[in-house]
Image 1 (cartoon, helix red, strand yellow):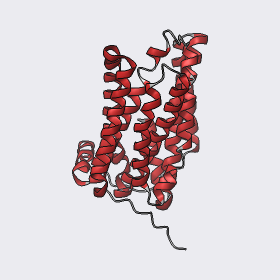
Image 2 (cartoon, one colour):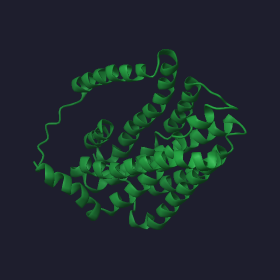
Image 3 (cartoon, rainbow, N blue to C red):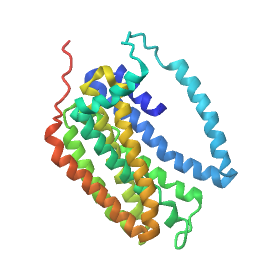
Image 4 (cartoon, rainbow, N blue to C red):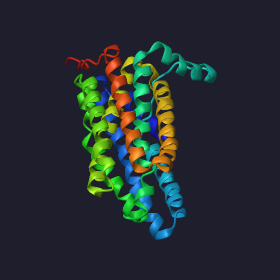
Length: 288
């Protein structure tokens, strides 16, 4: 929840013609942090046991809270006060009123189902022969994903220049093609590394494009837009996590790869069928 509040807050502070870039930078930090957490947690679990991960996380959370309290600017802008039940209801009303939110939320559901389809069962084939990797070694694959996410950090600039749809189409195509090397993981771990880098690159580019586009439609409701968008993000993540382990148990890594490619294909098809409903022109910079 905190991460998404920070995205909406950063977007509210940004100038309209820089909003995509700002969202891209903040989202990059979030995605890279998620991916590096796998690397750090794997190393800590090997060195000090799995409980150490939670102890260190608690301490870091307190430090981050103190830093945010000290450094974040105070928002003195007066906002309309809305009763909490009405506020929650308005989140769902936004889905009815804003086609951009509906379409981009569904795309988010697809892409996060796709990434969790890859990451959730990954430890299963890597921890058994012929690989038999340790927690630390498995966690190192987070570095590969972080490299891909970092490479896509400038996708917010592309959105500000009016290329959100083009960025989305290219990234979804890359996500689909990424499952080809992933499927051949058993032949060489280099195939897996290539797939992890490219799929995280694509995820980041689409995710930033999604958020940048929905924040444009109702600047006064950015937090509620984020809440609505993240409902589908969470649904997709849950579907991918649950189904991937079941598929792996029934059909192995080949089944997981086929399912992941199928989700990517559905996301690309959905985008192609709906792209004309959500035009993305460049943000007009203020004169003077």
